[in-house]
Amino acid sequence: MVYGPWSDDIIFSMRTDDQADWDAGAPRRILGMKLWQVGLLGGMAALDCLVLVVGAVIILGSIPSTPGGGLVAGAPATFTPVVSPMGAAVAPSPSITPITMAFQFPTYTPYGTPAETYTPTPSVTSMMEGWVKFSVPEIEIWMPGSYAAGNPQTETDAIIASLKEKGANFNWDVIKEQLESVTDNYVMWAIDSYQGNPDVVTNIAFVYDVPNPGEPLGDYATRFVGAMSDSFRLVEQSSSRHPEYEAVLVLLEAMDTTATKTQIALYALKHKALVWDIMCFTAADEMSERLPDFDRMVETFRVLQAP
Image (tube, rainbow, N blue to C red; front, top):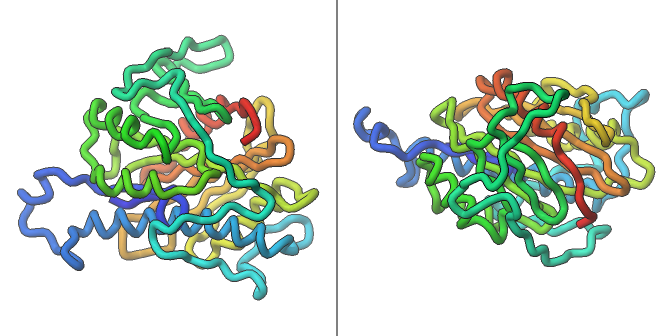
């Protein structure tokens, strides 16, 4: 599997580790690992890279944008994205005071039994029936019942237990290691137990960031895209809907051609002095099908308190 919002500093996907891999014949291995395991580690590296890049952007200061807020084809010469070793933690930016966050699951049990089901309102479609609300002290969001979610640093075991209960069969050791290695600005991580593409596990990271002083949200998104131009190509950037917050949607596709194509739907939402990045990682051939659900999830996102 390939890990998306996580490793290399932000996103995560995984390959299945079931008996069918062996029944199909002796699979190729690289350094003792099956191809899906290599892909999994590579995807996690991509997620770690994203977070590190954001931190690097803040540390290095404001990056000039193109006239009219256009997209940057490449990062300025003075700004070089740094890729840390896989699994390395990214230090919070200087403007963020590191804190120890104690998260809880008011609507989530260790075995994934929803404590609350979604009752559609007149403004919500029937496609959201059966959704569950997940929350930590900072944020809350509604997601399909196939997801397990919580604080990646302190609730990893509960997330894994829920995924197992829902029938998922992933590489649990890799998931546990990556979830527990993230930095404090990761307040929630969600993983879908349902797999469409057998090579990729769909997952979502919720991260807060500090924009440059007075920086418009569109410029923030442009700067983010420019910083990642060596590893991801821009598919689309546009405004997005949210009932309370200004929002921007950026679609990125990994340029790595050695594994299953993956894409990121990045939703950047402005709330007071922070930008909340909701990074949805999935297989490229699933993005068009999953994007409407991602949109609906983001519309239910609420900030409950400052980190």
